[in-house]
Image (cartoon, rainbow, N blue to C red; front, side, top):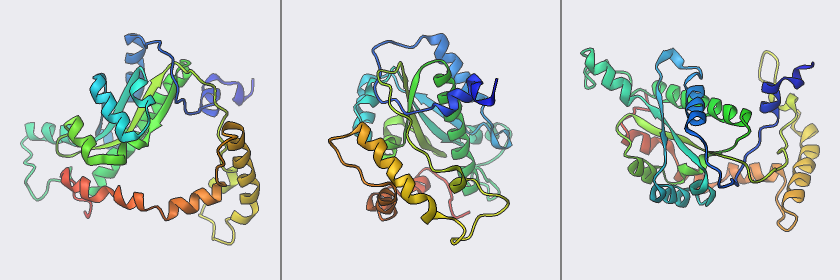
Length: 259
């Protein structure tokens, strides 16, 4: 058996986003296993500094679908929002006599904010992989960050928390093609980051643009999609990204991102 024949490896290599789900529900015992898998993800400094909110209320699901501008968000049998969470650690520290107003208090530092974001993303990926391994389908929901302030209010997120990503899980009602990925040499380097001349963008980009075009042509023959390079250029000058800046909202939540 080769490495590619390993079921875990196949699960990872065949991962794709599922945006259409059947009406079949997900048993509680499977849900619990998925949540336990998320908890086994790495935790920086063992801070366990993330939480996940399972969304069950239909009205709230509808509001999140409106924020994400994607109707399937409300239709997924399981829907989670993963949250960067130093609030719980601040409460725990308080039981040990640590005053959050003390100048030495550090859970509100930018470093911990980044740590907890990373940990939340790792936990989400562990849950997604576990769900895929059980034959379920998932889609990661960055679209929930279209309106972070409203999302915070809807979820009643306290100080020192911040929404990171959502995850929708269900039984797949579609079998989309695998989306192309960059050639490995374009993302994996040896020892140091290559210089711009060594990066070889001009060498792999034309063929990759063609591959991406072919992928989208097969999926959306009636809707032309720009080449990968054009999509990156558009993202590089997107005004909507400036509107979603993390800093003001994170400061509203009590983090000091300049620290």
